[in-house]
Structures are given as structure tokens and as C-alpha cells.
Amino acid sequence: MAFKWPAGRGQTGRMAEEGVPVIRYEELPEGPAVVLLDQRRLPREETEWVCTDVPALVDAIQSLAVRGAPVLGIAGGYGVALAAARGDDVAGAAEQLANARPTAVNLAYGARLVEAAYREAERSGAGAAAARALAQARALHQEDAEGSARLAEYGSALLEELVPGGGLRILTHCNTGRLVSGGEGTALAVVKAVHRAGGLRRLWVGETRPLLQGARLTAYEAAKAGMAYSVLTDGAAGSLFASGEVDAVLVGADRIAADGSVANKVGTYPLAVLARHHRVPFVVVAPVTTVDPATAAGCDIEVEQRAAHEVTEGPWGRSGLSGAEGEEGRALAPVGAQAHNPAFDVTPSELVTAVVTDQGVASPVTAERLGELCSASRRQ
Ligand code: MRU
Image (tube, rainbow, N blue to C red; front, side, top):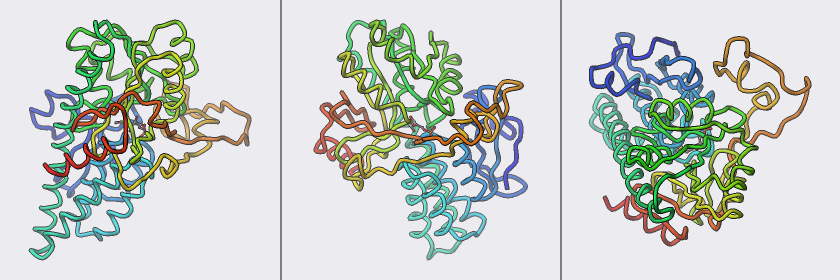
């Protein structure tokens, strides 16, 4: 079951100071729940979506109430903890959560990590195992926040090397800020660090068709952070590069294959091609949990295909997003039009200047260097 409530209900003082949490696990009088800042309704309203069981959370993941690779991992982890607390079938719940969306590897990683913690503690009884699962999910949440801070540090230092002198005009795509993270995000965490240091001249925000994660969510975060930013249509990026107004491109990733190929929101690959043509650094920022050694190459990454109506009718109406008054359900294409709607594309490593992870930077992006970064995280 899922229901909506006003943002912040039941929050502690500390949480209230930091803004509405993107995701939290709560013991409500009705039972345990995963509470999400509902990203489908942003920027129009800040409300929370309360999921009291795993099917509700899976639906929230698929309809993008919660989205973006790192926080999907956290959601997967809390989902398994929720199933354990309810006494549900934990293996079945982990399977459903891990497969709710196929591309972001963090989702399966988070679900499986917490499932393993539950299994390890199972011989001490179901109550102890559920407590162990929740502790593991909370630890994953905390580690992601700490990793996000390191991404900001490594990424901003790298930008100083690549484009010295400050006054940067950074182009980004999709949303990679606090809405996708236990902390300040991935690529947008780097932008925020540059902004705080006084080094950001302008953030160019690609609107990110068809569901407008850039225009709705990155612009919402940029405005809150007090950045100078402009939203552009995805098709306007080329002329922006041509007029010399982009100093660096910063994006996140949903899965990085062992060979360094990067799956990210559809529209990322054309930006990488443009950046190479115009000799602009193209930097990918992601926690090491987004690197998937089990996926050998870019062609092995499963790219999620989404419903045609997201393209033919726009993000409102059946997509369930909250638009301006009167926007709901407006058809853009003729009734019955077919659509091609991959949610992600894959950028080959040779177009990527650097991958910034929470364990360090890969530049050039090679399988060997990514392997080293993955081993560094396993040693901790
Ligand atoms: O379909 P979404 O909104 O979940 O896609 C999100 C992205 O593509 C992000 O760029 C990616 O998850 C990186 S965020 C760290």
C-alpha cells in the first residue's frame, strides 16, 4: 500500500533543518514504511509518498517517485529491510526490487547487499535478522552520503586541473543532485562544490526529454542552491558548444561496464560526441558501486525501454508527473503514433575524459584503472 502525506510529517529537528529527506525508513503507528520525497510532483510541490510494502515501493521506483542510481541502491536496501520487518518473503522481495528497473546497477547491489546481511543473521532468529537488514540499509545510506562528499572533493580538484582559472560554464544532463543520493549527489555535488568556492559562472541544464529530470529536478536544486543556471532544450546543446559557451560537461552514470563504457540518461552520448568535437572535457561522476565488473562491455548493458506515451503524450497525464495546471494528458503526436523510448544510452570510454569515483579518478578511463578503484573499495 502507498499513500501521500505532506512533506516532513514525523521528521526530527535535524532532518527538518536539512530539508525534506529524499528517502527515509520509519516505524509508523501503522507499521514500518519507506518514505520518499515524491519526485513525480517536483518542482510543483514537496510531498512524501509512503510505501508500506514492497509492491508499493517497486511501483514508486518504476514510476520515478524515487530515481537516480545511488538512491535506487538505498531504496533497494530499505525495501528488503521493509520486507524483513513485515515478515514477508525476503528472497522474493529482493528479487522484485533488484529487477524493478534494469539499467542502474546500484538497485540490485543495494537489494542484494541487504538480503545477504539478513541471511547472515537468520540463524539468530527473524527479529535479529530484520534488525541486521535495517542496520545494513542504514549503513549503505550513510556510506553513500560520505562517498558523495568525496566525489565533490575529487571532482572539483580535477576540474581545477582540466579547466584552470574558474568562472566555469558547466553543462549537465538529467538530475544528479541530492535527489539521487544520501548526500549532495554525484555530478551535481561537484557543481555545488565549485559554486560554493565561487568558481561557477553558469550551470547549463539540459531539459532531458522525455521526463524532464533536468528542467524539473536539476533546475529545482540549482535554484535552491542559488546558482546562476539556464535550462535549455536538449537540441540546443550543439549550438551552445559551437558558440564556445561550455567549459566542461559533468554527468552521472547508471552503470559503468568493466571496459569503461558509461550508461546514463538518454542524450548523454550525443553530448559526449559534441564535447569531443569541441575539445571540451567530458567528465562522468559516480560512486564506485556504479562500476559493474560483471558487465564486460557497453553492449552488455541492458538499456531500459519505457512506455511510448512518455514520448507521444509528454511527461504529464499517463506518466503520472505533476505539471502546470491544464497540462495533464496533452497529446503531442497523432493518436496511435509509435515511439522509440530508451531511458539510457551508452557512451564509449574513449569519449570520456575522466570517471570520478569516491575512491579516486580514472583518467584515462581504462579497465585496469577501474579495476583498481573497485578493489580499493573492497579493501575498506
Ligand atoms: O531514469 P532516471 O531518472 O532514474 O535516470 C537517472 C540518470 O540517468 C542519472 O543521470 C544517473 O542515475 C546518475 S545519478 C547519479
